Length: 431
Image 1 (cartoon, rainbow, N blue to C red):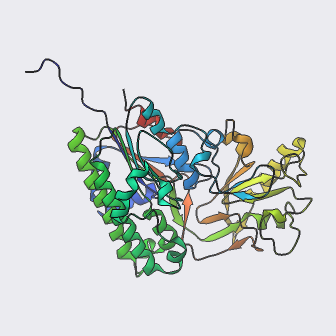
Image 2 (cartoon, rainbow, N blue to C red):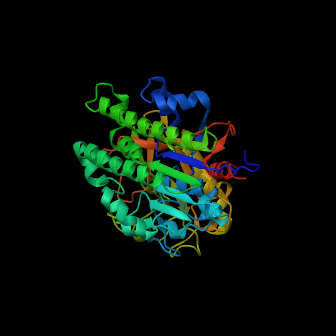
Image 3 (cartoon, rainbow, N blue to C red):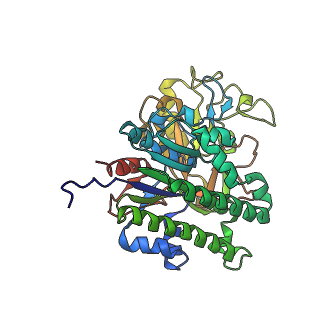
């Protein structure tokens, strides 16, 4: 008998399900659509979790992987403003100012495999492998190290579905969901065999399905209702395979985690914040058909960016800024109060307006919005400058929700969880 046994390797496996709400997990496990996940609910703890503000993937996944908020990591949305202007830019992974959890692990020699993690494009170097997810544009820039691209090409790996075409053609949507899932599974099987300490695998097709066909779930007579459930059966099958493989490696569920980045619900109405700001006299444009915020006119006090960020047009920050610092508190209060009174057909529209200076802290906070607007479920906030009416509808069926994300772990880890707390939970798994 050996006097000294080799210490067992500490491993962690994270399964991400983009846009899957806590409430849907409960429903689909109860209905036995997802028996593998139902089994985990019996042996571990399902936590209801708050997403980021705004409740969008670009921010929420960055909160998750850095353990911080926008005030520190610097990502406030899929779009941002170029400094000192009203022009939009598209921030990416190179704009993230803080370390990720796999950066921290890499400092101690831990090797990570990250597959389809949203908001990691272009891929940054790490000790391991990173395959960026949405909104990656070019696979050659989405893979680190680049030498792994050849394997992904052989798999027919596709970063994401064609969202524009899928939105209009639901038959095409299903074919795209099938194609991308096949590539994900091949990549999962390939990289699982690698040497790793931390493994992360994210499914994003769930979010796409919810945006375009949420009604297929809520309406049992919908032509795609069964197909919606079958998609989740496939997701559950992947979860089951991963859980079984992880248990074979580790002997249990310690270090196994599942989470989503936000919840989802049905859209009843879309709310166009810039149209409301115009209606209330806070925003003006130089013509009748503005094409962007560059068309903002003198005298404007506030404007909005997708999906729910309101910026005060501060003097010294923006070219046509007119709001003095002394007026900021009262203007924030006034806009918040008026939004709180907004109704649609007798229904309250806005759940809460957050002062961003309270939500965010850190060196990047001053670059962010002044107010963050949280709507009631069913009212989807938008930042379009082209809408004339405050209320409207498009063909999108599902919207993000803030406090209906989920987190599963074997032990209970808290009662009022935020997604920014999860990386600390994961890192605590390592001695």
